[in-house]
Each structure stands twice: as structure tokens, then as C-alpha cells.
Length: 257
Image (cartoon, rainbow, N blue to C red):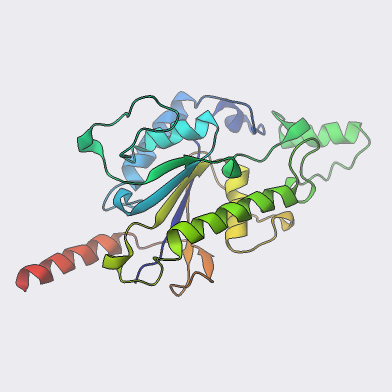
């Protein structure tokens, strides 16, 4: 039975992510090390016998920020169409591995840090203390002055989750694997927004702090329990090799028949 998945990919390392600086709207390039690590992640996790199977992807959402878009390029998913930010397609016909379309969406842009853009958590708390405010600041509970509140983050993530489920999961979940078609979704974005996305996926209140960690270049997986769209879950560990083993067994049975 088909159980769709959502793969969350945080962009690769930048100088600010390396230093713990909050990076929302600021455009930064990946570091050389960041690019190298994303390339290796793609080799390790993307392929017909890997965690992310390109032919099973129905859609790819990506942040408007260049660091996220560059990360998607480095994963070498093998998209049929050119990326929306490129004039020419990067891969040859022989490198095409998925029919999934790439959609840039503001709904998965990073948390707007407002006055805290470019600052570390330590700097933010020191600045608040100097201004006579409590240093016990928590972005999940308090949001950012001049930036986004937890309510605003929740609103746009819920919109994206509803769009994703209705377009790509609702008609595939629970069907035999041969009849469901591509239904997995890939999202390439940023640390705080992807952690908030995972929280909203399982209907947790963002303001309570989801207590999730996602490193630069990291990959996470979301899915469902009991083949039910009403039971979203965080997939802590998946037997992704099971799919390729099942395909081999099916081919053997067809040959015998």
C-alpha cells in the first residue's frame, strides 16, 4: 500500500549558519564546504535504491532564497524542466530522473527575523537586556519585532500543508503501489521554517517550541501512520531499501509467470 512521504532538506552551510546568525531575507552563498557536503548528501540519499527516489517525486517546493535553490541544484535530482531561476536546463536528457515540477513558494521562505536579522541568539538576548526587556527570549513563543509571529508562521505553513496533501497525497495514499503514481514531495528551505513545518505536520502548536533540530544540509522525512491521511507522523527511521527489494521480487514473479 502506498504511503506518501515529504522530504525536508535544509540548505547547505553558509557563513551565517556556521556562526549561528539568524538568516531570513539576506541572500548568502553556500560555503565551499557547504556545497561539497550537499553534493555528497545527494550521492548518498538520492537514487532508485536510496531514501529519495526521484521517479517517485510528484512535486518540489523550494524557498525564494538563492541558498535553498543552489542546494536543490546540488542534490542532482534530475528534473525534466529547467529550474525557474535558470534560463537553461542544467542536465542532459540522459540525466532526467523525475517528472516533478519545481515550484518557488513564499510559504516556505525562512522565518522573518525583522530587527534580529543577522544576530545570534546570544546577541539578541544581550540587546534585549540593554533595552530593558526580558532576556528570556524564545522565537517560537515571542517571534521577532518587525518580523514574523508564531501565528503568522502557522498560517502560511498550514496553507502549504493543505495544498500539498490535497494535490499530491489525498488521491494516492492507501492505493496499491503500482496504481498510486508519483506522490512523494521534496521541500528545500531553511532551519526554523522546516522545524516549524514538521511541528504543524503533526498538528503541534509552534509557540510551544517543537524541540526539533535540523543541521545545515540536513534531511528529514515526514509521512503517515496506518496509510491514513488523517494520521500524519514524523518518520524517525525508514526502511527505504524495502521498496527496491519489493520491486526485484515483483520482477522475478513476472518473469516466472
